[in-house]
Image: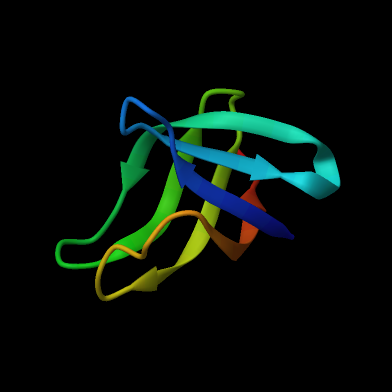
Length: 70
């Protein structure tokens, strides 16, 4: 599913998933060193996966994500 990543005025990463009408803050980014992306834990309890990038992208950006069952 598609998700829009953006940084709010405090610099905190937020995610909006239009298909599910979900808006949440990123609480934790489980990443590998030297890459941006991977697994994100959201404030609504969801865990999502994003394909990794070599560098942090410019925000806002729309990316394909997959919800991970816990």
